[in-house]
Amino acid sequence: MSSILRPTPAQRTRRLIVLVCAVFAVLVPAIQALAGLGQSQAEFAAAGDSTLRIAGWTFSIWSLIYLWILAYAVWQVLPQTGESPLITRMGWPSAAAFVLIGAWIVAAAADAQAATVVIIVAAMLSLVAPLFLNAREVRATPTRDLDRWLLLWPLGLLAGWLTVATAANILGVATALNALPAALSPTAWAVVAVIVVVALGLIGAWRLRLLAYPLPIAWGLIGAFAAEQDRNPTLAFTALAAAVLLLLGAVLIVFQLRRGVDRVD
Image (cartoon, rainbow, N blue to C red):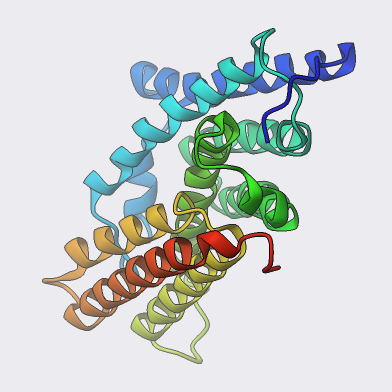
């Protein structure tokens, strides 16, 4: 929760690094797109989207994420922002995630397919793991607290989107490299990926009581439904059903259990 404790010199240095890393994360895709360096993210995704495709408009969520992580980075560096436990615990993980999502853009532009998988998995874990490990603190953060809206929401949104993007990235690269295991059909592997991300979304809602994590996962599944309707209706409607289940489950968990956040681990 927000604190009136003034940050130490070391903590102020960490805050500046977080700000620099956030600016890096936002500038890299802008520079790559404007300069036309390497292939675009759409071109990279198209190379392996025959197993699971997500509608292009779904990626507009990045605009919201970038704006919100910049707001977080600027807010946490302000002198009047006290050093709360969440700012302390999420500072370095957020900086790592920002660097990694910028690095992913570089790897995708260079068509370094295997590298993109390693990078996006690392980026996802760098946020999901500390959020889950600090679940009690996350749950206990009051609704009106700035830590909730300027730290937990932007980082939760990024963590949620990276969760669904990681599944899509792994499937896409495995498809492009003809490395998708033959034990299941491509559609079955895509359904497995949908089940995994929905499970993570519901676990996150239960642990964190934070809609910011499951919402972008549901958004990605809706994008899969939109993209797969004509090509693979089975997968499309599975993704839609999963998105509805996740949304309903997350809302019920967050709002029905919100009053008991201090009693549930």
